Image (cartoon, rainbow, N blue to C red; front, side):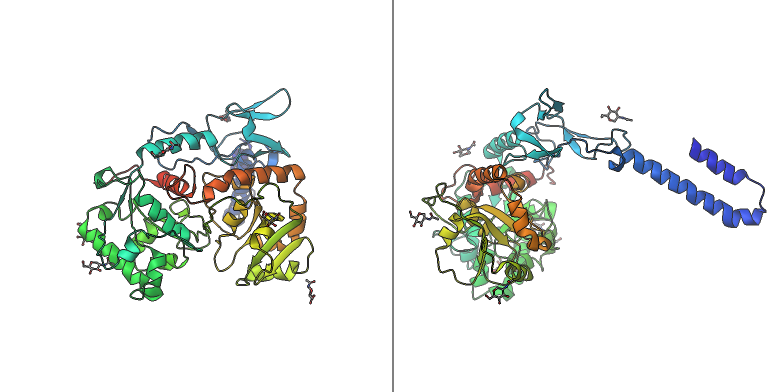
Amino acid sequence: MANSSLLLYCLGHRRFSPSFRSFFFIPTCLALFTSLIIIFYISTTSILFSGHLHPSTVRLKPHLSSGSSSNTQENIPLPLHNDSKTPLVLFPRISPLEKNDDGGYKSQRSSKLQSVFNGIYVNDEVFHDRDIFLEDYKQMNRSFKIYVYPHRRDDPFANALLPVDFEPGGNYASESYFKKILMKSHFITKDPTKADLFFLPFSIARLRHDPRIGVGGIQDFIRDYIFNISHKYPYWNRTGGADHFYVACHSIGRSAMEKAEDVKFNAIQVVCSSSYFLSGHIAHKDASLPQVWPRQEDPPNLTSSKRKKLAFFAGSINSPVRERLLQVWRNDSEISVHFGRLTTPYADKLLGSKFCLHVKGFEVNTARIADSLYYGCVPVIIANHYDLPFTDVLNWKSFSVVVATLDIPLLKKILKAISSNKYRMLQNNVLKVRKHFQWHVPPVDYDAFYMVIYELWLRRSSVRVS
Ligand SMILES: *[C@@H]1O[C@H](CO)[C@@H](O)[C@H](O)[C@H]1NC(C)=O
Ligand SMILES: *[C@@H]1O[C@H](CO)[C@@H](O)[C@H](O)[C@H]1NC(C)=O
Ligand SMILES: *[C@@H]1O[C@H](CO)[C@@H](O)[C@H](O)[C@H]1NC(C)=O
Ligand SMILES: *[C@@H]1O[C@H](CO)[C@@H](O)[C@H](O)[C@H]1NC(C)=O
Ligand SMILES: *[C@@H]1O[C@H](CO)[C@@H](O)[C@H](O)[C@H]1NC(C)=O
Ligand SMILES: *[C@@H]1O[C@H](CO)[C@@H](O)[C@H](O)[C@H]1NC(C)=O
């Protein structure tokens, strides 16, 4: 090979004195040789040199554990040194791409799944893969079992450990809804040996308001709770808590685990404040709980309303991101940015705008995403690092617009660049995903409860240490 003969030439050349050769010539030759190898390696593996993008679909594999019969697809890892210059991703075997006569690319399985946009595949469907989701969901519905640590009605902390006996309300309702619905569902098993996962039933929201505990006492309470169950039952110690989970919507839940590190690092944390940026949140292990302001029936003019404004936001200024939004867009006639109390009904604002802004406040999460979906408004997410709810199942690009904080000055340009066809697609999909962001007692298939259960099912462990 040219490279190696060059090296031999360098080493073998005897015109220079031996000391000169070792101090100057050999290192230079080695550096040259190394550079050539690096360039050769890059040219064979990178798409930089290929001139055009190769079409590819990247699918999220919705099933995290292996060895289950529900795996209907097989992933094929591509070899590292392959001249075909394809990006290194796992390609599902079920969707080989074929070039059709009409020049479009279609997946063999369902042609409507993908469309081509500037040579890049765009998935317009609300699911990354609907068929796999539906099939896996059915299996979950049949076989998933959860064991809940039992507590008696006369337990001094029954208020925080048992489900609430009223209809949950307010900003953190998701937490109470989940437990209330779970306890009556067919996923519950009284037999721990049959359980896939174990539920730690403490309620962060209720502990926070309990005068015996309060914000300052939550960490000690959680530490004691884990101490108690790990001494009374054998299940925690088997996995160090890896097959346990808790659910919390208030952001205080995150620091609540500071004195119980096993919960933070091993257990599945289903939380509203799910940010990739925070060390307490471990993406893929933990799951995002949607923050939902509970509402009962559909708004009357969901589809008929005329959306005259381009975008709308209302809220308090409690973060630099919101300050920036106010600074740039406060006087705009098309983007309505409102801080403080609204004089017109909130619902009319959401029904009267094409896009509704979800802007990071103290935390990445607020109820605004669920609000906008409920009112058929396309959400615009301005909250960097938000691990969005159900993101390993739902294709957020098909029903929302994600804008980086830095791009706030470009907001109007970005939203106006969305064609009316694209907008129609986004809004149609908003109407399709609404149901995943609503709670019902008793639950309704594919609602927020079932979706959270599905996220847990994806995270169940296939390894049982006994
Ligand atoms: C690269 O992979 C493709 C598809 O798997 C295969 O057809 C081709 O022969 C491979 N090329 C090399 C150089 O291994
Ligand atoms: C899931 O299970 C519930 C309760 O058995 C049942 O009512 C529902 O129809 C099931 N859904 C699906 C999609 O299998
Ligand atoms: C732990 O167990 C002790 C003794 O049964 C009990 O007094 C205490 O309230 C329990 N603490 C928690 C947080 O469950
Ligand atoms: C679990 O582990 C802890 C600490 O190692 C130990 O004190 C406790 O007895 C164990 N629990 C059971 C049920 O064996
Ligand atoms: C918006 O209007 C207010 C007063 O009406 C003015 O003080 C402010 O400078 C304007 N801001 C922008 C960004 O134009
Ligand atoms: C929606 O309908 C309600 C009652 O029918 C009405 O009060 C409200 O103004 C309507 N809002 C919009 C945006 O059309």
